[in-house]
Image (cartoon, rainbow, N blue to C red; front, side):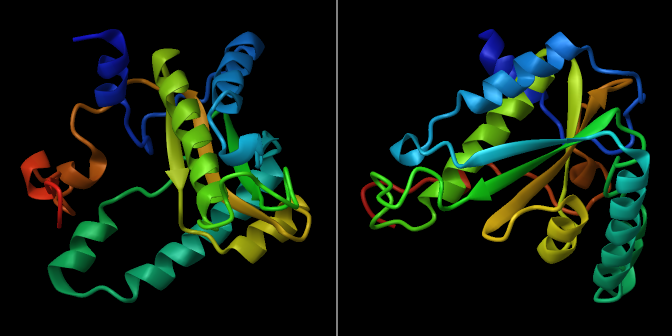
Length: 205
C-alpha cells in the first residue's frame, strides 16, 4: 500500500493517548506548512492557526467542553446514555498544545473567485487545511483530536477572535502512546463504519 494511503487509514481522532511530551518546533512548523498548503477557493487562504499552550486558557475551554458534554448527555437515555458515558470526548489538558483553526469569510474578497454560487466554499477550504494538518501530524507520529463540544461565541470571546471570524476547529495535538487500530466510537459501540458500497451512486441518485 502506498505510504499516503497508509497514513490516511492509520489516522485517528485521539482522546486518551496523548503523552503530553513537547512537539519540536521544526516538526510543528512542517505540520502547519502542510495545512497552509491546502487548496482554497479563489486562493483566498481563509484560515488562521492559533497555537494554544497556556494552561489557564486550556482549563477554561476544558470546563466549557465538560458543560457541553453534560448538556448532550442529558438528551440520551438507556443504553445510548451508558455508551456515551464511557466515551472520552477530548484531550485538551493531556495534549502538548492545541491548534484552533478559524475561517475568515472576508479573506480574499470582496470578489472570491469560485465562491459566488457556493457560499460555503470557503468553509470547505478550511476543512481541507484541517485534513492536511491531520495527515501531516499522523505522518510525523503525532496524534490529533478534534473537539466539537463547544459554542462558537464562547471560544471567540475566550481567544479574542475578531468579529466575523469563525472558530471552526479546536484540535488537540501532540505525541501519543499509540494510535488505536479501531476508532473510539466503533470500539465503544456508538457507530460502525459502513461499507463503501452503501454510499455509491452511478450517474443519478
